[in-house]
Length: 252
Length: 252
DNA sequence: GGGTCATTTTGGTCAGACCATTTTGGTCTG
DNA sequence: CAGACCAAAATGGTCTGACCAAAATGACCC
Image (tube, rainbow over all chains, first blue to last red; front, side, top):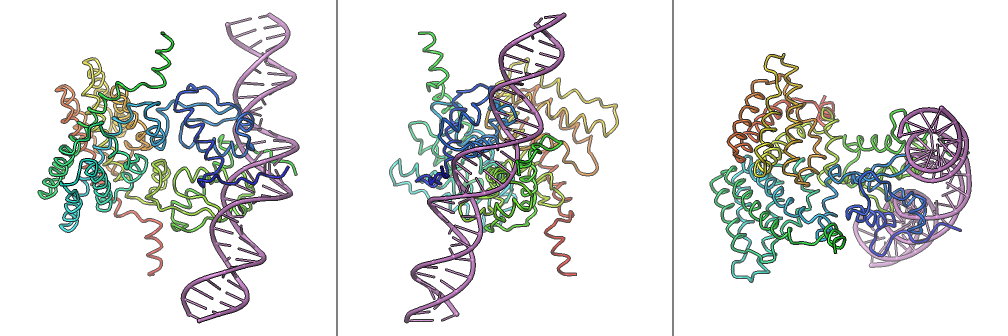
């Protein structure tokens, strides 16, 4: 029986990647408890109809996410608190079924880091660089409709984050940003978008930049995202999760 | 020729782990440029005298660190800015030879995140929890000698960070902390330790906690680590690196 | 219940093979 | 000379079947 001819799937992903994504989601959804072992490599190879090598590669990925620990005798599940930041993306993708509060948690952390980023950048920026930051903030067209403004706010935020990074060049912040999926933050909104609040933030940011006041910039950013986080927390309390769906059916 | 009998090294690490660490450090030290390809799996298997499977596992680890991109035709080096936060630990370990400024960058980011952590925790803490935080801050014995106080400061900082996490329970912050190697931060000091500055920080923190003032707590923490970062920056400018050692020998 | 030991199961690694995709080098044309 | 095209070589992706080290399991005894 020669080796299989299916190297990559239609989406360009390898079999090992598909498998690690499936296992990752099962783990994040709580199918296995911390300390428990995954099924053996041989069993998983049978389940997914692949060679054991592909399973090993899939499990390698999970190990680097920090959600499993691989040792002879079996692959054990780690507590989620011991995972690496790279697990945040998949967690967010599972929002409604996994740990919904991660969204509001992310927003407040993002705000603090964006504030820091602004502070560091303003401490170093030339007048030209400040002008460029102000130009980015002015990109929103106030006459467009609400959903367009939402999209524009997201795009402005992304461009602003990027420009700050280009000024302060703090690698640690950049690495954190890579893990935070900041492109998602602009999408983490209450059901009713708040163009007024978003526009007020951009105005306040512009004022702080014109005044070259890094602490002021950090403060208006932090405050905005703290407020957003509080709103999201209220919504998260209402979201049914896998865990509380099971709890409810156990009591019915 | 049967499979090798050497499964793990004396330190409990697999061959694949050893190899990925070697390749990781070579990459971080700039031996390959972004966009270049690593040697092929087959060539690396020859170089390290192992089976190609072990090389594939080693490279899988590098891919999850975000420092390489694996595709048919070769494994290419990513720019460091696209790496994951997990690369920070190894970068710090290479401090004197890699990118020395990452230390001061880490310190300022750590300070901002610790400040946020303090703010979030104080927003939620019971009186008992605040008392526990104060107790941790009082652990330093002012009559002990300077190097003991340094060790105590580090230990207090760690316990404090942990206690804050236990109060606010923000998973995103926890995941970032996992990647920041925060246990290293207390060791990132100028050559002359500053027990006076450290003790002043602990005093200021205690005052803010007693006043239950989260913004005050965040501010004293941030300021302390900003100052430390500035000091470290001055020292970093004097450290010879691989890159500027090569530059100098090219001009001699 | 705990301790010991043999057996089984698990992960770690190997050689050799074949397929899909990318890279390289050669040739031709304008 | 530059650009296009093509075949061959090289690369990663995956397979089968194998063996070894370390951990897990179950039987037995006290």
